[in-house]
Image 1 (cartoon, rainbow, N blue to C red):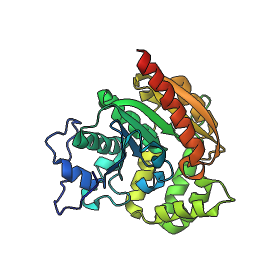
Image 2 (cartoon, rainbow, N blue to C red):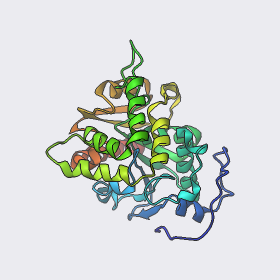
Image 3 (spheres, rainbow, N blue to C red):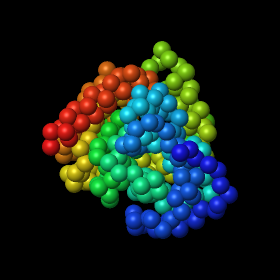
Image 4 (cartoon, one colour):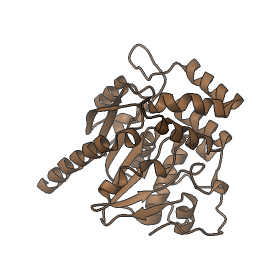
Length: 298
């Protein structure tokens, strides 16, 4: 199944209840620019990070297409989603983005989902899995962080609050300058400037007002309190030299997230699915193979 454009208007008054069967499935798939491919039956749902879209997964998804049903989408406000559906109140918190995930799962009737989330989508995936754990089999968290702010003496998120507010002020005053500054910091891998350029262009293609609200929901939030209640097993992929989610965050998550597996990557930067796709694929495949053995033995 691939996304087909429609002229249906999509309401902005989304209900808070995650049981959303009364909504039109095709409207949801159109709204989030959902694409489905692959030869397998078990769904693997890929969720992009802040300022990105589903195209960022293009180097990884082909490796799983033979064995899984590949589901890609854009959050409302990102990529080729339907901007008419953007609701500032709904998307002022990450729970609104988690609702996108749940509505897609409902529209496609996805079960036993392997959820792959990059950066902030790791927390979004956890929020979705907490609301509907029966839909998710595993969470694969790429560069995750439950809180980007330092909280001494026990937590190093990587940023002081003043740093984040300064970046948001730059977004307000000079959005293009903000994108040009932040993209290479996030991507790292200076020897491959095309990667930073692609990320910068992705930032610049997003509506600045929507990006600003998403940034606030992402970087000023603190979801450490939900970790202990997670029941869905997870893989944490922690990059080296990650300016957005430092190594300490990966270890913190592993200590506080039940049923988690931590893998420290050789990949540098915050986007290993773009800069180091082979290592990313291999670690995910190894984890899923081990999970398959465990499931077969039960």
